[in-house]
Length: 510
Image 1 (tube, helix red, strand yellow):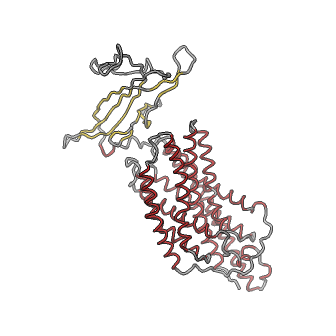
Image 2: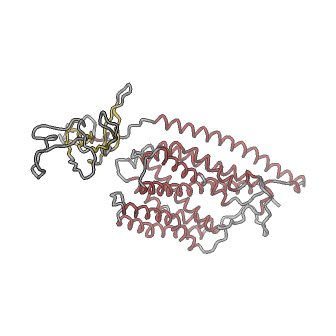
Image 3: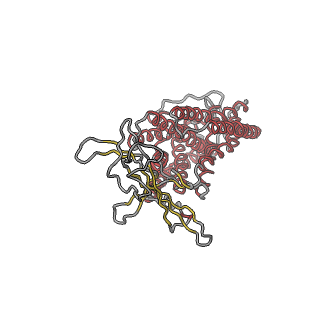
């Protein structure tokens, strides 16, 4: 329930030393219990709500504003005399006789074909809380230490990783490049091994190159949206008091970031010697949103079938499609046109006419294995924050700790880039030059772990028994994992793209 944009809370006194009050969002519809002396469990419904509306009086203007909305739910079997009609009065809850409900000693049991009478009373209390700070009670953090702990933990992992990566890179690359360049002078170039051998194939366009362009473009669009949303949120533009503000901001940003998607995919496409940029722009504009929209539409149809008030109305759906085809698609085409008009990105080394044979790979360099290994670290870096986000979405709590989230996001970017570069380097050293798709999938595979964790969370933390609710959960988590895949994959891809161009441009090649 909401009053003056404030959600309803139940104050609960804590039993520990400071006996402070914590707030539970919303009230429980009922409870399960047994009568004293009997073993049989019964269900009781909270059919009386005692509301407390807190207001703050402004001394200058003498007007008052609402600063709090609390409730104490009770379960009571209401009684009245004679037959029920319009003028009936309850003997258990009667304002005329000053009888209000103060306890649940005679609770209302839930039974088939029995009537339940719902009642409420309202009490107004003056409060010292000013209107500007009325949200503070809702956003009290009970666990900020856990967040700091998780951030420090992730940072330790990242620093350790960065140190390792930097050492591997600097030592290996510096040694390799200087050694290769010396080899040239000593005319021992026949003995060269490792990544330099594949210089003639490393920039050969991959199979399904148009699909890779589409996914990279989508990832750029998503990255732009997430970054700008986070920056807005960190500066406090998206407070939880503005209901739905976050979602609106994200949708609008997604639509306007389409221009970058078109540009990024067209630049890559031209590098792969592609010619049909319009087809590519259309696929970029429709692929990811199309899949997400299809899942969302099915989920919404299921909610509609349940006659739930949580369903998105048809008008809103239509507005979303209009934004997608009216703003996003044209912008992707504009970006694609600009990107395709620019001169193609030059490869630092020439590509041979005949593809080189890839030697037998060790078991740990098997694509599936290295891709799955690559996803563990990015997921590990965001794992604890993920728990809080899931809790705030599915257990109906506020998530407003965007400062922490921003830090975690930066950590995620760094981890994705580093792990992909390391695995790409090992891959090139074992003379396997098929790195385009693998770099995308290496960091993108963290989305698989996200989905697995969401499944684990579903069975351990949530008590969902209805099929529809379960379908909703997994449908939305599938959308989230797909988005996470596109985001992390693109980061990994660009890290590798930069890295391979860097190392091959710094070596003298005949």
